[in-house]
Image (cartoon, rainbow, N blue to C red):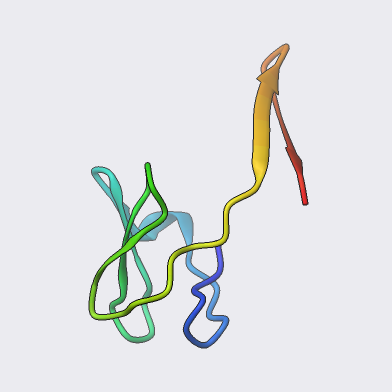
Length: 60
């Protein structure tokens, strides 16, 4: 995942419960909606995705 603020890569370790927190400026995002819920005002970019035969497929 990439933060929409300054294009910072967000590692998988930044996930806590249903939130993702950017390590650079602590913007926090809701993983269900992609909305920024703390510090910032830009949502995460979302992509169409599905799981087929245990493989995640995404389109952008």
